[in-house]
Length: 185
Image (tube, rainbow, N blue to C red; front, side, top):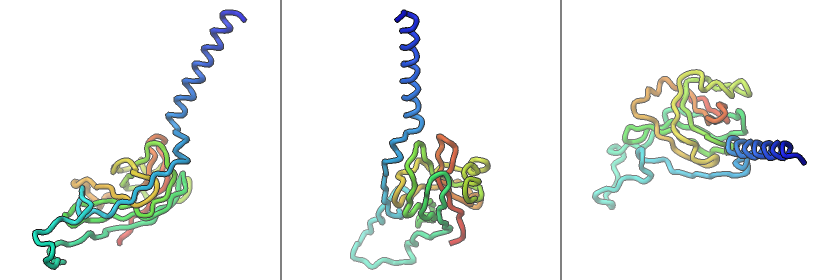
């Protein structure tokens, strides 16, 4: 074999190995077989998961003194790029903060999944896959798990009247895995 031919073969192998490595990093196909379950309780206030301690734990609770969480809007997730189910709630907590709560979420795992609060209408089928980045949206953070119930804090300065849906958004491929239209609770 000639020197040029060996160099060509080595060059092709190097490009192939780099290409496979990049493809594995970009698509992360192993996530299709990995589930991550997160089961969080509804917080009392953003950043908490348990009720605040009282001075006298034996004293009866005054229900008017500490209003509980209130559901402002809700919706059911529909599938887009991947089979997705569960429910979404926009909840006002006792301290006045808000969270988006995903309950009984079941979707595929994927690279770079986010929870987005958006102003886009939820459309069935492939017509709804790419609409959520066309208008106003805010990322509430990375999806904590592709299964279970979890909470996402809403920024305090956000005008919630400007947002009407929630999407499980794959930021890497600009596609919705699933979404829910938020209706009055």
